[in-house]
Length: 122
Image (cartoon, rainbow, N blue to C red; front, side, top):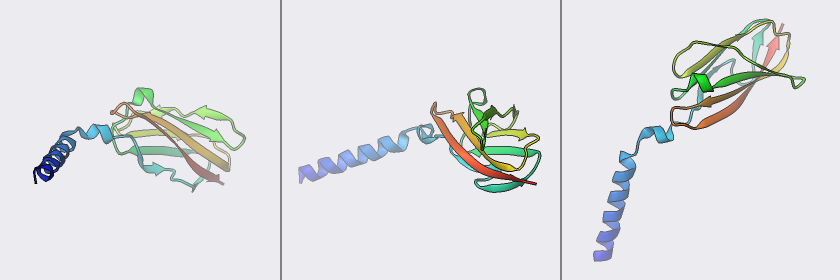
């Protein structure tokens, strides 16, 4: 019977420890809204972009690049935005397939990356 009580006490202490851990440990930045969205078709030539994350991000250490179909990459100039958002404007894009490549540093200190493919139509 004492062994059962010891397991119960251990489970209770583990549960309490997990309940008291800071939520920021689980706050990797994940895109919760994107414009253009994945595989979206957008009108040429100017395309506003906005990536909203599930947590605050470090704007100074975050970036977005535009990848063209021929493999060329260029940095997307970002505008001042909300603490959880990266925003900018792509100008003069001809029709074709593109990919936004983002990299952000979340407030928990972790870097996350991703790609968002989209198509520019006339």
